[in-house]
Image (cartoon, rainbow, N blue to C red; front, side, top):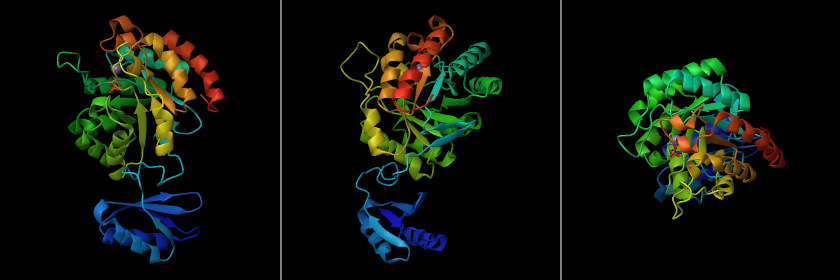
Length: 339
Ligand code: PEP
Ligand code: MN
């Protein structure tokens, strides 16, 4: 249920309503709007009609049901778009597009620092790089783990870029959270509910990737797991879905961008690298993503893609990334965004 407070309702009235919600066995999530506050009351769907009684409390304007199964992620609960502040001056969901770039995996100091410098020069503000890699084969490179996180920290110190890196296991969340500015949940873990809950409690920004076969509704239910634990800093990422097509690694569901922007207040970014699997296709899909209204991109860049430990074929060389970023500025302008 959404409890809409009257314009000008005070702190005391808000407190009384949240207390009553708790007494009724629900969790209140207060969303401070520009002109009025609303409270999302979430919990057992079966008995939610008891919340209707809140209408009689002072300061309450109305009590309306949230029709979507995802509640806190729904644009019904907040018309104001969420801007995720990841620190280091990076805000995802505002007018400025945020480009995250870097190698699939952190391999060594030279590789990550060199890439960090190159992507920064091209205009990226977040460095990506996996230290814990969720590989399809147990025999593939699994990442440098904590040593990889330390190298990311070195690259951050050198460049001032924020860091996004993946966490694959709930038991590593605290460790990854100590190094990362944004914790990435990969496509294979989008329904790892134990991981999502831990990240909800950790309270750091989360980049949640859509699974290769999750519907948009399932994707938003996964976001809801994080939000319902009290963490509002969730960035959604469309990274391609599995279809019958084999010419590309996945099929970029470009329409997911405007659909998500309608259904949720959370920021949406696009990963054209995992969506296509081929470096030559990354620029055109990046332009398309900006035209579709995304809030940013996450792109794989490697100084020597032939020698990459993972995902070389889809990684851009630094000079190609630079060219793409220059052209992307033009698309950003038409989409009334900045880069
Ligand atoms: C990645 O970002 O390197 C990755 C493994 O992506 P995804 O989870 O989208 O496959
Ligand atoms: Mn990758």
